[in-house]
Amino acid sequence: MSCGVCPWWLGYFIAGPWRRLWHDPRKTLGPYLAEGMMVLEPGPGMGFFTLDIARLVGPTGRVVGVDIQPRMLDVLRRRAQKAALLDRIDARLARPDGMGIEDLEGRVDFVLAFAVVHELPDAGRFFAEARRATKAAGRLLLCEPRMHVSEAAFDATLKLTQGSGFEVRDRPSIPMTRSALLAAR
Image (cartoon, rainbow, N blue to C red; front, side, top):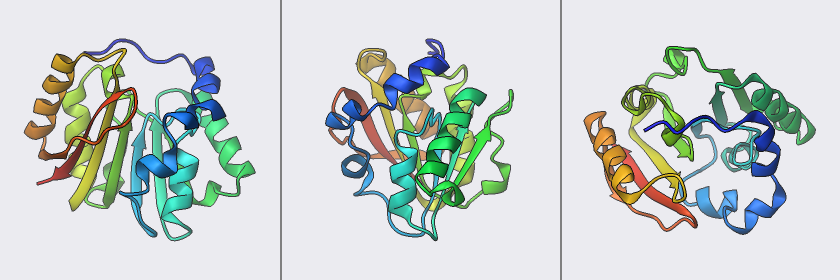
């Protein structure tokens, strides 16, 4: 299902303030996040969601952002430092064989997979890794861009999630996306 990785330089556009008109991080994620949570964000790019996640989980919470592009992570760290949130954010470079999150096994409360799964070469492996990291009561918000992912492709992705130990709990309406809230089972 992979359709290529977003180039690093496009991250400046994607993280721009205009995007809040459609995807306000606090409005989109506020219902799912609470103080003290551990959040995994694969493909955080330059941190459009990451900084607000760090604010929502507060000083006792943690955000682990995993990306394959060092330049994206460099900008994310600079933005987090400027916002005085770097101590809540663990920005990691993914390994060629996976996310490198073995240390998070059973510790993650919430996974945000926003416009990233369609870029992965092996979505099944991703969901298996995410499930191992997720607590028994953990949830995953999967959002894929309508312009890149058809309804049929999204349905196929949802079947992969079920094989990895997640089940669909809701289909929230998030602008310009095909979305599902999944729960670990």
